Length: 394
Image (cartoon, rainbow, N blue to C red; front, side, top):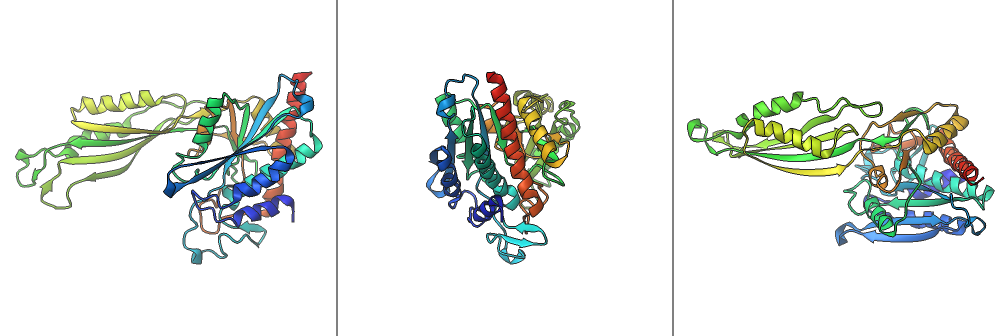
């Protein structure tokens, strides 16, 4: 059993249902401390939802402290997992790592405990070969990624911002691949903007509509128009912005009452061609055009981020090709990740991890054949960035 697989199995065995860390960060910290990492644990959140965060950083070796071009590469990820669901539906216990048919099964196997183990072992191997590297390495781990994400990475980022700590590169270990590890990486993600719209009418008896005002009827033309709006055309990295209704609720439950209000929940997924403010203004203009009496509450879940081809993209692409022979695909598809928080203090953020077909599912798994290549890719990225940093010094 390789060191990467062994640590992966140790992490899977930790029952870290969000927001629990269940000892994962302690295991990782025990591996990082002997390498010279300085560890800080930040516990946050209310008593009923305590979140554990780890910030670990290995400063540049003493022999290299005179270098002015030192760079900081951070491995970021989460130790929490989504609930496993009914255990009886799993072929084996979700927190007992189990090998079957060339796959390792367990909750978090793909999302994202294998990535965490690969981060650690890649760092161990790299530092054994380059103990005096001018590259500083950090780990940013949280147990609040699968939950509300209010007390996790965002809190660590705020702490680092207050200190004036700038990250140069970050790799988030999210499962980004499709068929084989490395075939796709995320060099950005769309932003998410949600709204709750309450349209007001006048409640009344359904037999006397002239004495009432039906907000559902009033909303319908505006809703039909909003569905047809082209918010933007997207660009080379992002698809056009989408607007989707997720819930509509109106009425008292009685069949003979015209409701007094109708409530609509909706969401924008948007790239860099639009801003939250432009989307808000355009939507409200449609509502105003139709003369609606409404209230609107907005929630910005995250702004889009984008890492254009450059030092980190090149280092990752070269590492993937050297290890697997694959020419990786850059993508911004999918949902949000903690990369949206990290991008505020880090100009280059890439998400790279194993295939994601089984994530959040019963019998989550990773192919054994994907474990070592993932670790090797991470190590090669460190080697590439080390070489670039040394070159910058010369």
